[in-house]
Image 1: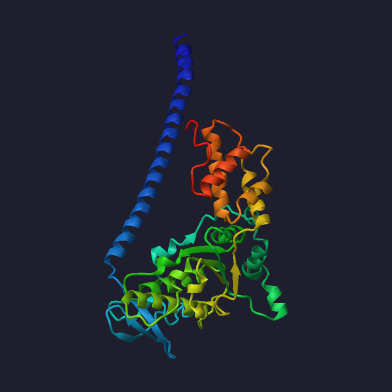
Image 2: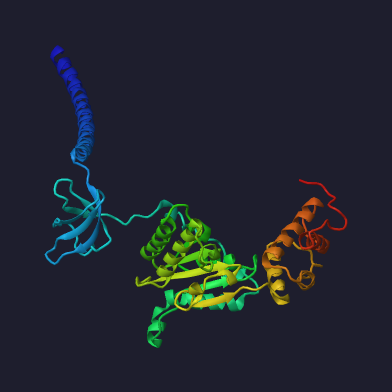
Length: 395
């Protein structure tokens, strides 16, 4: 009986030991996988550290600019240390990219060309690129149907359908100048172009190109168009262009001479020997009478478009555009508002609509009435206190 009990006990105990051993094997395998992962991580970290050590041990390179390429494959470079040198070019360098004017890295030992460096651009110039396009469409602009057609023909058509110009046998026009009184929609029209086209939009105020030191303004203009060419198809919008495009005169003031240098560089970029490709220029000014004649000739600004103050029909359209977004009472007639705002610009009409909304808020109303618009016109256009005062509560 004892023997049978021992066998029975052994028969029960053996499977339990096997299960424990199997569990232990699974734990060891999991532990082995963890160690493999840790080993791979340490190997990757070791490779990164070794590459960093190699970078630290490699001597720094010298920056230079290529001035000429010789027939035997050597290059003439102007090093940052001063002299011009005739140097060899490493086989790893792409000779198609090695052209005069390019920045290159030179070896400290023998000044051989090691690599072609990317073109340098001022961070201030890079910031001029409009990454997020304005949410403005042509339907948001009232009273400028003819001007919209003109600018779409000049800017959008060559970018979207270049084959049309090839079939006719003409070159597309390069630039357009918008001029007119302040607040009539010049900048708004440029924003619509930026929103509607797929091209890169670069916006710059001309006064930003006027710099203190000699040659800085011309350098910024050169880098501006260089960035426009690399981002092509692109549109360069120069607002208040009269800041650098004024008539040249014999003036000995150093500041005026620097403005003239900037203007000369701008003229060269707009109609120089370098091909601008798919780069369109839009200029805007309130004082076209101050611009230099060289800036207005065909080949630079091929088309000059006047943006006038809106007429009766134009004012009605602008009021409709703004009223569509507002909670306006049924008794408000845009035709009456347009007659009451004779001589007003688009910016004035927007200010009237905003002020009318403020009167409704002061009266603790959700709807803007005709009386609110009348008081807003008196306050905004006549620059006086509207009749009835400004009674009401401010929320």
